[in-house]
Length: 296
Image 1: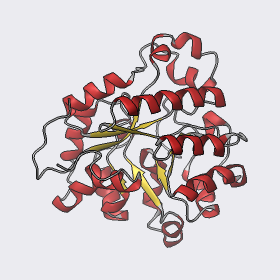
Image 2: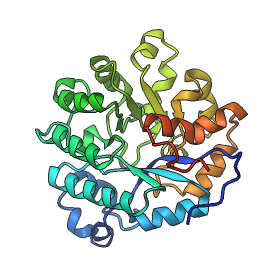
Image 3: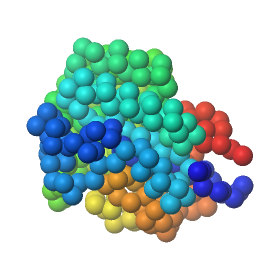
Image 4: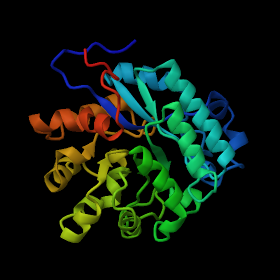
């Protein structure tokens, strides 16, 4: 059941969430030895894995209208394809509540074709891709060229995990830091990109004009903010790059959507920023069809 929404209230979109097939959720021990990064993140049974139905229940409780569901950065193209099929089926089951991103192995010869297959099925982009998990290097952008061209051809974005070069360590942090990421941006200046986790701090470097020029087609999501920054990060980034380049994103189930959304609302958003940050930017970036989520 979609939450009731006042006609004047902005549509709320969580721009970065994760769900897994039920057999992965219940049988993680089968997948831990099959994928190094999955094992790194989910070997601990306290690390939460959820199917799509739990995401929908969380959205209802939080008052979130729509969620963008990311794939996992599997290193095996077969696991990517299976995950994509599950996300496609999930979107078919909840067409007004979720949209999905395809997951591919960027350096594999099948990546561009799998992305195209997923776009034909209705995927609204590619991601979350992860250099440490999938063995690519932002400093060697040629290996990502076919995938980037496939996304540019459909005018759809790629969502990348980007890491902070300083600060505390945590599972999944990785080494894909801004100084590497900007090499990729320089190679594909017209590609639309979503930089997860505040781009590893990249928006703060946009105070440098040359970095701002490289990042002009980058939109930042707020995934996992609670683990990384004080919530003043919203005000700081909005004042640096503007309200059209920030998307509310929880990284559910890493963080609880209801509490996260409440903290975002209390973070000092100005009235004119609330609509874009809480949903308008996600709808534009991922080209969500008008009325999905419903406008009425």
